Length: 456
Image (cartoon, rainbow, N blue to C red; front, side, top):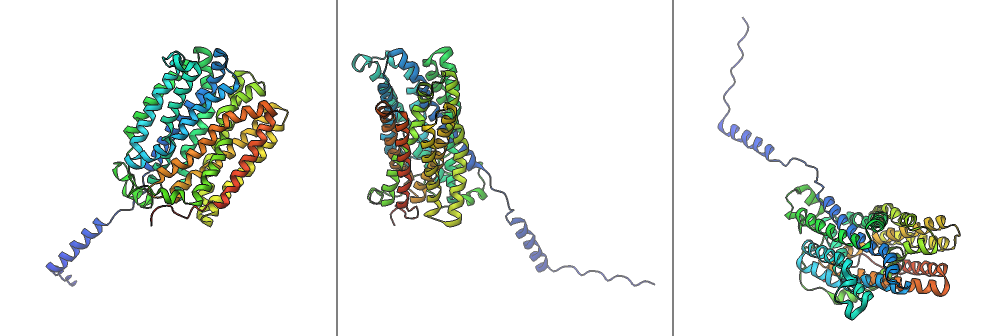
């Protein structure tokens, strides 16, 4: 007979308890999850906001030709209108950054978009406002453009602070490049669309339409963003851990360390380099369309397309600059990881400006000059990474200092460029720009991104 199998003894209470605890511990172990991508969605919203800023400023660049013809303005007076925006924009960089540090960048960006959109729409009525009685038509337009500049002033410092809050340190250049792509989108698509609107309905309609678009963008940013990653319901713990705790806070700890900022040789070198970069970059922002039409003699419709060439190239050069800058920092660290991309971009920009200004063929000249514009944005990405490299808590204020310097150079450029062109010709004006961008790059020998300006 086969032997009967022995019965299993009942498990002890202690064994059952241990087994139950083991099962509970296993079930309680965290399941590995992939980080969500909310931070990149925030970057995408910043891209929309910055694109809008450039739609509004390029709007005036196209309208300048029609305003010039309607009111019989000289190139220098048109240049003063273009500089009015840049002056207000430059002067409100530091206050805009301070407001972001004090109240948080999200709410300041909402207010900023609403402000500049209202005055953008008001541009259409500026030649008939009550201010014409005291300031004249040019003065009235100048005042409205100045107020638009004040409204847009907080945009870049607070967008940069958002990147510092929402991105890991090794992602910041790429994060900056994402919203800097807005320069390329605004410049690439605005001239043809705005030129078409102005040809069919006049220049005033385009300003009203852009003002309405700003209301939609402000609502989108308010509805889809939060001040910090911790407040965003769709962000998981893995993404919060990916960002880490090394970024700036939404609100500062203590007072802004002005003495450390203004006593830093790195900050002064960056301010000087940003001033020079702004001078060259604003030639493309303000005068390139008129250069294509008035100097290279392309028809308005055709010129509106060719004038987008620098900005189409920027669509590639901005993200490329972010990838190169971040990889260089990971490979060789500071300071050379940020310096080398700047040296390369400045040298290439200088070369392309010298060649493009001397070419006789208008289409070849436009394309070569467009490459110079793309190199400037390649450089700008590394410049924008520096405020978050240098300061955890006050990157908004520091961004304001550096972008104010950039736009003071930009305010000088729209006036100096036509003056140089009138006295010596456009070739010399572009040669001066080539020398300026080379000097800009050389200042980066004095830049040390690893030397924080925060209090110890």
